[in-house]
Every structure is written in structure tokens, then in C-alpha cells.
Length: 477
Image 1 (tube, rainbow, N blue to C red):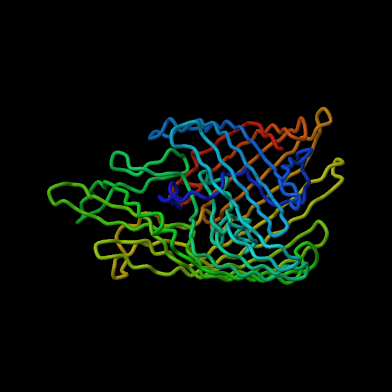
Image 2 (cartoon, rainbow, N blue to C red):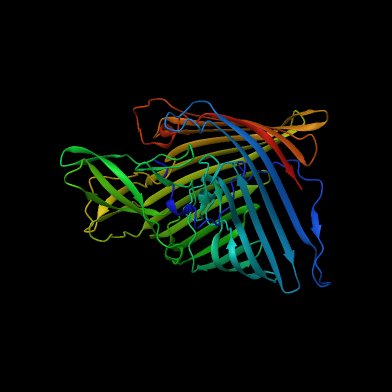
């Protein structure tokens, strides 16, 4: 699969900065010793609760990419701020973050959540950008089908909330949510620009489309040009969704049903080709566009103490969009996805606690075919897959295995194998907490495939040169 990084990232950026592999776990890790409080001027208001995190990180890739040798080492300074302000008539919440790689054009300020909520015991109304557990599978595997994601680093995707109006009736035994949105904010990836007739990016997690084009049995060189529509045109795409939960996800059996008609979070691409008869090149204008899909998902689970098991199903049916004459556009193939997950934790192992996650994902469909204005397939397709993994097993272990100078040393290990791609992904991370507010981090990622000639456009094959290690520190307050 080629990771399709979408061109509207720069001017629709209201998603959040990447968080270091945050996932749900029953393991309680060290946190900040206290919470900052900002006293509001009104005597009727409660103090605002604010949490923050600052992370400094250096990352070294193990190999050099010939076309971009400068993308071997990077430094990242990022910050995150989460806050809640309660008043007598409404609550305000936000989750903001930003970061810089200390190079021109490599900074971001984005928003995961930002909403106002009515007061209420069970029934509440929300307006703004908010996350919900629409689908266990979408959240665990970061598919980005229900909620958009921020993924300038493909191995550290960050789930974002949908933007709109939410009506939520929530009790411990059941919940029902209705959501409507007049605005669309897509998933974000590395910024793309034109350079030397190609589409390039200052990221190792972007692969440019081929510049070879077979025209009348002759190989011609493609010259790409970007045509970015107005942000308002892309954002003016609404949708609606509903979700119902029966049972308590923290105890006993539970079921979650979700359905919606929403814009596809990944922008589709359309292009126009122009061939000069006297030249052996093809001018291609590329422009982002939006299509919708019908989403359905169901999760069934059971929680007993430290053990949680779940089965999930998700399908989407994208709307086929036809381009204008002389243009072609991406046609998204439907997806049917199945997954199973098993979480548990063990205490008193070497006097410590270990948390385990075992997950399996199976995807049917999910291809891409470029089509012409009459719906017939084009003879050139820019990108051919929608998702990174299609038949994968993942194992994750996390826990405090030791203490040094009476301070915790935490290990995180994750291994993923994709049977369709015949490849694997390994992540190992170590964290040492010299105090409750500081953490020292060292980790690495290894990607590989058994056969480089098998599935050459697969994610693991395309990015097998991106083995890396990183280190840094985090401060929380």
C-alpha cells in the first residue's frame, strides 16, 4: 500500500500532534504529582483543571534514502495541553498540542478536542470537536474510518474527534448518542509540495506517485501540478451518525452499535492529464476532493475484573464520485473488517503488574481504482490501497519490570505480523521515571518483510528502510 498523504493537510489543520503510542491499558503508570489549577474570576465557577506535557526527542533512522539524505535524523519538541473548565451553566474542555522539527515548514498546532457541554446528570448536549468510542476496531487499529487521525508519523497516528453537535444520554447500563456535523475536517499527513515536476514531502512516511506513464505504448515522464481548492469547499461536507450501547463496558457483557453517513476521512484525489504531442511528457494536475460513505459497526464484549474480550465488525460503503470530462478520480472499494481483542493484566509478577493485549484484524476489500468520467477504469492508478494492514496479528506487553533507585523502570513491547504482506513491525520502548513529573524514554521500531518481491506496494515493504531508534524525555504537569 502506498500511504496516501493528503494535500489539504496544511490549510485544514485542526487535528492534534502525535502522542507517543498511547493505548488503553489497565496498567497504572506513574503520573504527575499534582494538577495545575487556574482560579476563575467568578465565585460561581470552579477552578479550571489543566494537565500538560512537554516532550523532547531525537530520532535516528538506520538507513539513508538516496532521494532525501537529509531525512536521516530529526529532533522534535512537542507540547500538549488538556483542560476542563466547569461553570454553573456549561462545561468547556479542550485538548491542544503542537510541535516543531526545527526546520522551515515543519511545525504544527492542532486540536484533538474542543467543545462546550451542557450541564446534566445523564443527558448532555455537546458542540465542537469531540471523541467518542464509535468502534473498538477503529480505535484499536487506528483505521481512521469513524474518526479522523493525525499521522505525520505513520507509526504514531493520533485519533481525532468529529466536529459537530452531539446529544448524549448516558447511564452505567446503557447509552445513546446522536451526532450531526455541518463541517468536515479530514485526516492529516505530511505536507506535500511541487518540486522539479514531482510531488515531494519532508517526511520518510510519504511515497510519491510514479512519474512514468504509458501513453500509446511509450513511457512518458509525468510532470505534476497541485490544484488546491478553497478550504471552505472541502470543509462544506456534512454528515450524521448514531451510536447505542447496552451494558457496562467496565463490567459484564456489553454491545455497541454504530451507524452513520459521513465524509470519508481520507481525501480522495482527482487528476487531469494533458499530453503535448511534440514532447515526451505528460502534465498531470492533481486536486483533492471529498466523498461520503455509509458506516456500520458492531462491538460485542465481556469484561470480568482485569480481563476484557471483544469481537468487532465494521463495514463502509463509499459513494462513487464521477469526475468532469478529461478528469479521472479515485474510486474507493468497500471495506468489510473483522477483529478480535483480548486484554488482561497479571499482578504480583516479580511484585509488579504486566498488561497484555492480543488483537487480530482481517480486512476484505479496501482497494482503490482510478476511474474516468463515464465510470470505466483508467489505465493508471496513483495509489491502490486504503489501509496499512489487512490480515494482522498484534501482541502488546507493558509493565514495570524493575526499579532503579526506588524509581520505576517501565517496558513496552509490541509485535505485529501481517500475513498478507508477509512482514512484521516491532516496537520496543523503555521509560525510566526519576521523578513523578519526569520520564526518560528510549525506543526503536523495526519493519521487515520476508520477500521484497511479494506485495511491493504493501506498507511494510514500502517502508522497510525506516528502521529507527529514538530517545528523549517527557515532563508532565
